[in-house]
Image 1 (cartoon, rainbow, N blue to C red):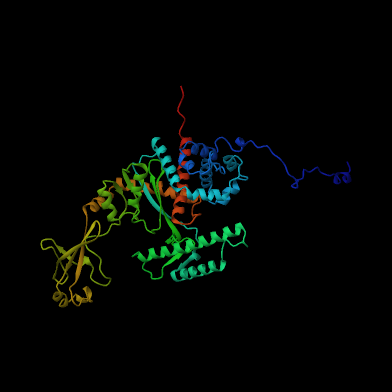
Image 2: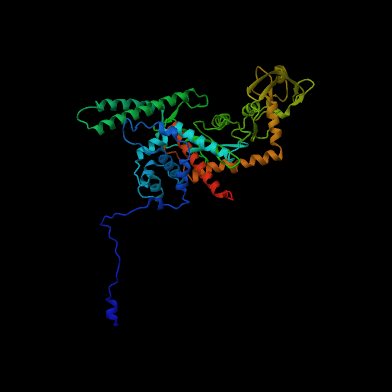
Amino acid sequence: MSPENATSKQPLIRFVNRQQMSWRAIDVERLIDEDHLARAIGVLVGRLDLQRFYQEIESSAEEGGRPAFDPQLLISLWVYAYSQGIGSAREVARRCEYDPAFQWLTGLQEVNYHTLASFRVEKQEELDDLFTQVLAALSQEGLVTLQQVMQDGTKIRAAASPRSVQRESTIREHWERAKARVQEMGDPWSEDAGPRIRQARLRARRERQERLEQAMEELEKLHQLKAARSPHKRVSISDPQARMMQQADGGLALSYNAQISADAAQGFIVGVNVTQAASDWEQLLPAVAGIERRLQQTPQQIVADAGYTTRATIEALAEQKLAFLGRMPRKDTSLGRTTPGRLPPNAFVYQPENDAYGCPGGKLLRYEGRHTRQRGLTQYRYRARKQDCQSCLHQPQCCPGNRTEGRSIMRLEESAAVIAFREKMASTEAQAQYRRRGRVVEFCHAWIKSKLGLRQFHVRGLAKVQAELLWACLTYNVQQWIRLRKLTPAPATG
C-alpha cells in the first residue's frame, strides 16, 4: 500500500449522539450489590416497629386522600444519606434521580425535598422512640451493657450566618420595619394576586414575625442570666436560639453544644442532647437522667472530663451511689487566694490547738465564721484585729488597703465525697479507666463530624437541631451495628 493510500484511510469512530431519547429496562434489585450498605440499612429499618410513624398518616383507604410516602422509605433515605455525609434535603432528592443506592431505596420513585425536609424535623417523638428501639435491640444482643458510660460534648456550628447576630436595638428596628412592610403589602388575599403569591406573602409574613418574636424572647432570657454581663445583648435574627461559643481553634462562632453519652462496651451512643450552654459544667446530671429515662436502667459508672467534674456534680453522683471517674486539677485547697502583690495565704501558719492562723508579724488571725458558696466546699474565714494590723511592720505588704478591718484569709475544706473522689482518681486503675474515654466517646464526635459531615447543622432552632443530631447518632449506631454483624461469624449449623 502506498503512503498516499495509508494517509487517506478514514478511521471508523463510534460517535456519541446526545440528541436522542432512549428507553432502558432497569432491574432495581441489581442496582446495588447484595452487601451494599443501603440494602443493609433498608433491611434493618424494616425490622423495627414503625407503628408510631404510620399512625400520624392522615390519608386512609376509608376516607381517601393522597397516599403518603412509606415512613420506612424516608427513614432509610435519611439514615443512608447521613452515612454518606449528605445532610441537605435538596441533595437527597437529587440523588434519588440518578444514584443507584438511592434509586434502590426508593424503587425509582421521585421524593421531593419538601417531604424529606419536613419528615426530618417533624417526627421528633417518633424518632426518639426509634432511637430507643435500636438501643433496646442492641441491649438484647449484649452490645450495650451500661457498665461504663462515657460523656463528652462538642460545639457544632449553627446554620445561621455570623452577620445575622444583631444588638437588641437593631432587632427592634427590624421589628418595626417588618411591621411597616406588612402594612405596605396590603391584604395578602387581595384579588389581584394569584394563589401562589398569596401563600408566599402569608408565609413570608409569618416566618419573619416568628423569627423576630423569637429573637426578642431570647434577648429576654439573656437579660435574666447572671452570666450575661454585657449590657449589649446580641442574638441571631435567623437562628435566635444559637449562641456564640468558642471553637476548638480558639475562635467564636454561632453554635450549639452537642452532648453525647457512649457505652464503653462497643462504643454505641446511648444518650443525645443539644444545649445552648457553652460550658459542660451542668450537663452530666441531665445526661445520666436521660439515659435512665430512655433505657430504664442506671449506668454503673460514668466517665467525663474536667469540663464536667465539679464538686457539686461529685456530691450529687455520690448521693445517687453512682460511680464517677473524672479529672479535677490538683491544687492546694487549704487556703484561699489573695490579691497579687500581697502576702500569700501560705505565709500564715495554722495552729490547730487555737483554731487560728499565725501571721509573719507574730499576731493571730482568729476564726470568724463559715459559709458555703458551692456544694462540696466549705469556707472558713479567719481575721486579725484591726489594731494588730495597723501597728504591724508587714502591713504595707500584707493588707495596705485595710482601713477599718484586719487582714483576713479563707481556709477551704472539701467534703468527704470530694476528698474520696480525689483519692480514687489518684489510683493507677482509675487513671487507666479514665484514659479510655477519648477512644470511646471522642471517637463518636469525630465520626459524626468527619464521616457524617455534621460540622454544621442544616436546620435552625433548638428543637430541629436536636432532631438532626438524633438522626446522626441513629445513623452512627446503625452503621456500627451493621459492622459488628459482619465481623461476627454466623453460628454453625448442624
